[in-house]
Image (cartoon, rainbow, N blue to C red; front, top):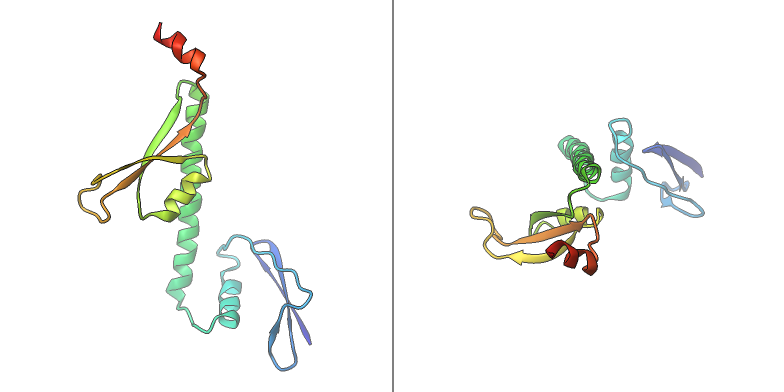
Length: 151
């Protein structure tokens, strides 16, 4: 039996190979990290071993680009949230997401946004045309504060 270890995203992937070439995870621990240009070849090798399909080089280039876009989106949203927090005058943040864009909805939920309504025919040139309105509350306004503001 050969012991096969490779770093993936700064983590270690340990797997056992039997003499017949079969893949075994017996008593192995697997931890996966981010895909980077430094470990993309390891991902490619893992996919070749695990999946019955071969992916071309463009697939792996796209994987890296998607990962970079996700990091960029996170940085941009954190930047906006930090500005709003430092300013201190914002109570809520609102945004619109196409109802079929489940990955974007999940992304914003991780940052504390929630769906508060759906706008019919919000988009004019894409289908589906409906959009969810998401909200993140930055300050909780108590009912007493609300009454005081109306005076």
